[in-house]
Image (cartoon, rainbow, N blue to C red; front, side):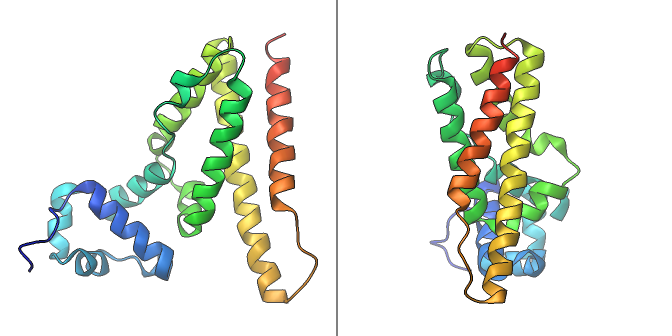
Amino acid sequence: MSQNREPLTRDRIIETALHIIDGQGLGRLTMRRLGDALEVEAMAIYHHLPRGKEELLDGLVAHVAVLPADTAARAGAAAWRDRLREWAAAYRARLLEHAGVLPLVVTRRNPAALTGTTESLREVLRLAGFLDGAAASGAHTLIGYVIGHTALEVRGREARRAAGPEQEVDWDGRFNAGVDVVLAGLVTTLT
């Protein structure tokens, strides 16, 4: 083992697992393969992730769902739509970049993995004047839309690649139109 290696941390473990998934697919992620990539014994990972692979998978979902820390702080009544559009576009891009993690985002049973993102979105909506219940519903709806659209987009892109050259779908246009529909629906809860 190298003396110049970075110390083993939870973040380094999750980043390395993400790299494995991005390059080889979710099915190829094992604790042994992860240990090899980190240049440690697989058991060393359990010091940072005591629940093992379950905790790793939850950590991957939370890592991909990261919302920039200043999103809520920058949001005011006049700019909330722009902040949520920025967030939605950034989250979609991150999910597309790490499409191998998308099945985990859709199927993980641990709702705590998205808690930070949900709370940040709720705060953006609260600062814009939404009551707590409407802010919670709005955050949930927007997260659901972004995840759902991105899952359909990934599946659609894969199907088109397999079928050969066909008419290209304007995924950006579809996504942005859908975000506008969700935001327009949120406005009706203010009145």
